[in-house]
Image (cartoon, rainbow, N blue to C red; front, side, top):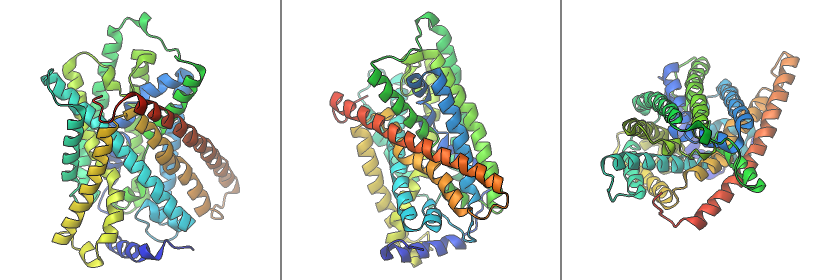
Length: 443
């Protein structure tokens, strides 16, 4: 089997040894809150009404339901590959390398970085928008702009980034899961309330614009839906779970998707019903009354996003730390050198994300391109391909294997097309927004 470049092989083996020495301590409940935190973030499902408005009722509903079922199934496939060859693969990159070799390792490393970086830019914009909305509620004539709140959120995330690993975030993520439910319940309730206040005869569900505009908006919507189900961290999460890890993650994923169905579908359907084709890309921007409940929903959003951000920045931190830390310092989490290296790495990362988010606060565009280029390969294409290759020749039931082969092949083909189309739509709208708005525009 082809190995990653020699410059990284030693560091990778050292990290593997350190991780192997650790035994997962989390239960299926911990897995559920981690998965729910990474997937069911307000920044993920707040754009769904807008995505439905770009597709219309029939195609929008079928795309949403299909994506839900496909990602749940794909997550179970990834979980089933735990120790598929008798070895413990503690990251998505390691799992890809064990199945596909060199190209698997580096392709997953690339897509994971695109997904995590794009996700964190998008959700930092969303967090800044929510913080600004809370500020404006109390200080209507205040001078602070969106960029200030993006910066404030970045500083807070830099503080959380000093926690050593995903398991150390379990209580943060438990609070985030509660906030997910709180955000969904509040936003759905307020959306229905606003929808009933609006003259229903004034609401249109038609697809506006020229034929080309409709097509590109549909492409953009497919990318947004793919982003909404982004979970590029399942092997890392599974590594924190105690044995039997497969069974615990199966239960955790299914529980998390129960939350997702209750929140995603209801918010998507009620948001589109309430505002029709005029719904904003970030649903909270469409809400007007009562204002105190909108403030509460924005607070829930910020709390949940703070945990999601941490989950997605961990692959980047790990990539640099495993190359900068020696095997000795890697095992001594309390060492001064370890802390200094982490502070430098996390500060550089947060500076980059914060500057990009503040300079180009085009939330909907980043959501779409991140979903198309990053999450679609990780959440749909790779799991189907990896399962078929890893399990080839191991199925005693030939009919079952052929059924899985057809299903997985259909998922690969369809979502590969979604990735291409979503990327085209997102790039078009980013180019248009850059022409329309100046950098560091206060949205």
